[in-house]
Amino acid sequence: MTPHRWVMKAVGEPMVKEPLTLSPPPAGEVIVEVAGCGVCHTDLGYYYDGVRTNMALPLALGHEISGRVVQAGAGTEGFLGKAVLVPAVIPCGACDACRRGKGTICAGQKMPGNDIHGGFASHVTVPARGLCPVDEGRLARTGLQLADVSVVADAVTTPYQAAVQAGVCPGDLAIVIGVGGVGSYCVQVAAAMGAKVVAIDVDPVKLAAVAGHGAGKTLDARQLDGKAQKKEIADFAKASGLRSREWKIFECSGTGAGQATAWGLLVHGATLAVVGFTMDKVEVRLSNLMAFHARALGNWGCPPELYPAALDLVLDGKVRVAPFVERLPLADINRVFHDVHAKKITRRAILVPA
Ligand SMILES: [Zn+2]
Ligand SMILES: [Zn+2]
Image 1 (cartoon, rainbow, N blue to C red):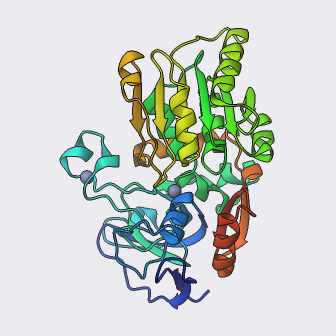
Image 2: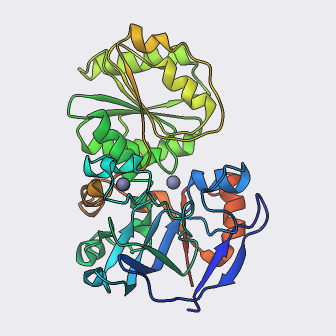
Image 3: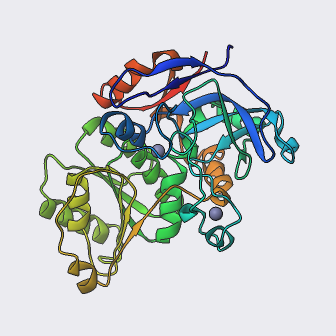
């Protein structure tokens, strides 16, 4: 395969294929031959909504990368030939925040497809720090390809981090709003951690998909208003012997409507995890947090230290990837972006170079 990348030059303009020269990586960095790179809501934000990337355009987007290390800079030789996941957010590992285990707020972090060229390419040069090795024997036994687990690098690890941060444990009631690319894994991760899960979406197809994979109850937000949803959830909690308070709410839709729904579901001691991203604003009575002694938590990616445990959930079959992904040729990137944006592709699209 001739090394190449697809770069975004301006908002909404067709991405362009460019040849790539593979110079030997500097110390501490590797070149990964991309097996697959997932198309995330965040990529659509850069491409369609004009969300600014930290690196100036033209830039190859894509931060959900799996592949194989084909060149290793000094000090990273142990990764050569290995199948790996590239974390969506790669902290520097050396600053004050990193040393205290807060890599997601590292000021020196690198996000492929934002701070550096991303994975919509045949090859990508990234820091080796934080690479998550993929056990290819276990991968083969799950029937998955290396490209498929690219989604672990964001769609699985981001809600995994959110669930860890929210302290999900057996006996919890978790509510996931928006069960698309990220939310479908949030449902499965919360269920794998022992929670009973209620899934809310406006798309019956997506609700049906998670009903078979982790959701104990599904609610169609087009059929029920916020009040009716809250009552249904309270009834479900009661019938399941769960608490009527301390719900763990995961907003994964990345929409103003979803965020308003999430806010309306606050109960005493609730945890609201904001996982999805939108430029929209919502008006809320912030004092509800005070009155309910509740908390709202942001979630920017996932520290690399948590990746192996999140990948284990997939390799152990506790989180199913296959029903929620679709492999598509990288050469069709412009059509795929259009179709994901137009919601014609509802599974997570994984672009595969050829
Ligand atoms: Zn993403
Ligand atoms: Zn740092």
